[in-house]
Image 1 (tube, rainbow, N blue to C red):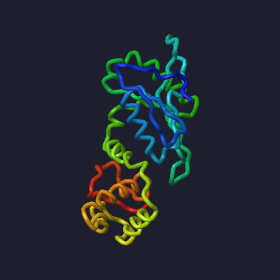
Image 2: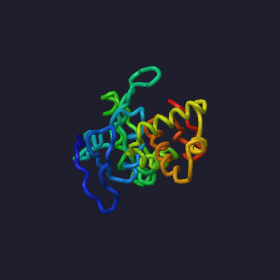
Image 3: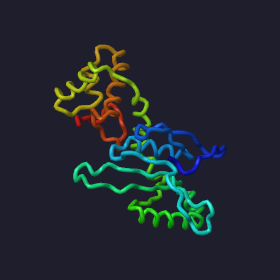
Length: 216
């Protein structure tokens, strides 16, 4: 549970984010925070995350310091080694430069607090968030809640297998379409299959009809 309530603010974007990983609505205080939550919500390495997770005492700051997000990870998929949680502050680089002196004692306290709790503390900026993967996730999110029929999903996966296990949306459509209207039916099924990881795509490259798709 958040240790502080996020207030409404007319100067920045605030709101609530519905995560697949958390059984609650999570508040955000900026568009950048919302985008970060979207990234980690689609990250298969992330088990769950907490917003405004802890208030850290800071000398000279009566209210202390509350970092933005605490991220918990699954063990490494290959080595099965556990991964330590990440405590992170989300800031724009311009803000960090402009307020470096104000943030310095807060970040130092957070680093020490994280060390004592076997966590990592890191500042996350727009350079880490506004990457090609984010654009792909924003696109795919529109197809997350559709419900293709079992028949359609099975037909799609069998077709990929028949094509050698690797294909593209364009190749799939070439096999599936009987008329132009069929594209409106099958494209959402393809994108949804990527969301569900029934088909794997490199989300660090722009998604299009020539994106390489393969089976898990």
